[in-house]
Image (tube, rainbow, N blue to C red):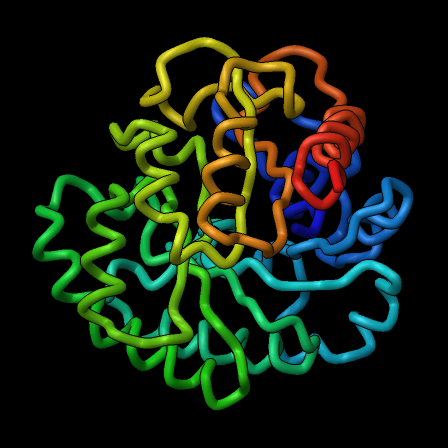
Length: 289
C-alpha cells in the first residue's frame, strides 16, 4: 500500500468551512503548490488533489506531476465547492457535469496517475430519492465516463460520498459493468449513511482502488457534516481492522489521510496530517514489512 494525503484535508486552508469550523485568515489561492510542499515534507508517496482547489482542467498538465516529484499526483473530482460547482455527476441529472468530468479525465491522463476519484452525488444533492431510481439514472453516465477514462488507460474510483450505501454502490457497479470502474472507500462515510464500518469495508474491499482513511471523535455519525475528524489512531474508528480487511482482500493501492469536519475552536490540521502520516507508516502492511 502507498501512503498518501487527499487535499480535502486542507479545505480550511483553501477557504472552505464546514459546519462549526472557525475560518482562517488569508486562505491559499487555488493552486497545488502548498499541498505539494507539505506532502513532500511528511514523506507522502502520493497526494490526491481535489479539483475544486485547482485551476481549470485545461491548465493541468504533466508539469504539475514533475513539480511534485518525488510525490505522485492524482486527482479527486466531484466535491461541490465553491458554490455553483457540480455535486459529482449530480445524480445523473446534469449533462454539464459529465462534460466537466470528461475535461478532468483528460487532465488526469496528462498527469499519468492511473486512478481518478469521482463522486456521483453529495449528501445535499441526494435528498430522499429512492436508491433504485438514483442508480437507474446513473448507469449510463457512469458507463460514458468509464469508457472515456478507459480510452486513456485510467480507472475511475467512485467514492461512497455520504450519498449511497455500500449495497447501492455495488448494484451501480454491477449494472454499469465496466472493468475500469471501482471504488474510493471512505470509511467514515459508510457510517454516515447507516452502514457498519467494517461490514461496509468488507463489502466494497474487492472493488477498492483508493482509500480515504479517517478517524473521528465520539458522536452521532449522521450529524450535519459527519463526525468530527481527528488524527489517525486518536479517535474511535476501528481503522486497524479496516486496513486488515483491505489487506486480506488484496488491496495494494493508495491509503490517503483525509480530514473532514474539524469542529469548533483552534485546530492545527497540518499537525493532524503529520501525526496521521506517522500512524500510517507504522500500521499499513508495507510499513510493517
